[in-house]
Length: 563
Image (cartoon, rainbow, N blue to C red; front, side):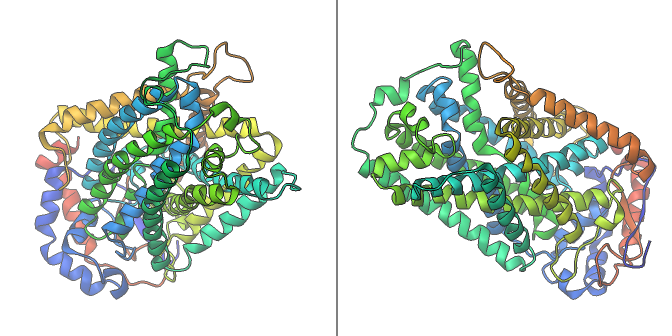
């Protein structure tokens, strides 16, 4: 191992900070914080607060990123990743054919309410453990770490392919002579993947401006589309149809169809934990990150409800929308065209969703690279991936690992679109499994009175909120794997459960072929030599604080709490 790489010392069990250990470290580190700022690279500690220094000590890691983000940047990341009203309009057909407007409207209220309790539960974990590992660190399991990686690859592919497919739809509408080919989508995908990844090399100000701009576009576009739909749609549906109408084309009972219709709304609340992957780059992370995660769901949840009502009033005939040349690619675009009577107008209106999808793809690349970086420093991946590039302040090698596989996954789209979307269907089911595991662990620790809480927590309401979040996550895993049509055939079968099982099996296989030999034993305490960053000075005194805290964990009250 060369001199630029941190030497990692693993304890005999995964490092699990507890309330008592965090308090111990806070006591220990009053002088250490000042020492960190003196010893560490000036660029890294320029925005490092005392709270952040204590937090990074408490989770057993070294500060290697610049604390460059504030609330509005990570809030913009959370808003862009969720893209609630944009995501729901893209998936509106499933709800309207699986229960009708009643399914979409009241299903949305249900999904938004339970997404809020899931976000609150995850925000508690983000406050207690503000690290770049986020979901991985909260679970600290080898198999789940690889599920996170695989889900990240598929998530980036899904978001960026959405951009490519919508752009192809705009070309179809604009040029009658154009003959669409699936490989055109792949070319557009590759171009935007290269562009999106390169933005991370342009400096943090570019990413900050991108997300702040996306947040503004998200709100302004929302207002403009509502006003245009209400002003331009001549024939609106009745209030009776909007609030009580139903239609069921699934072949299942109305109750089951309503559950399937829920999925359209759930798509608008994806990536709830994404902001947490930027914890080690955010000022006052133990407070800022959970606020961004939770307020994202609250804000998006409140503004999207009236949007759905307006959208349903101005929807027009769904069958004609789906039968249009772009009905399968971008139904919302056709709805806007029908309302305005203008192809350019419809394209401009839906381009808001396209831009948000692109920004979410960029953010997914960034968050995925942080997750792989965090896993690599715990020996889950080769240690050469646990390096932050000094020029760009990003884990560049890890970023290549998260960005390259989607370039190959999109080839499935060229061969068979059904198979491609089958692969994409497993994303949300995997995410719900990954949410359920840490929430279940957190709830169990609460029952045992061993919970670790950060400054942002749910207090006495925690157990009830955690239980509701766990129940909802488990329920969605079942629904997401359920066939959407009856009778079930080879063509309409939902293969999400099979693919999810395949991801788990591959992760277990990789554990036996690589994990056991890599030295992985859970979250590692970084104690010696230089931090994992090119051309930056070391934090010598961090060793003393971490070793003292670790000693306390293994003796007395700290040991009992971590057992």
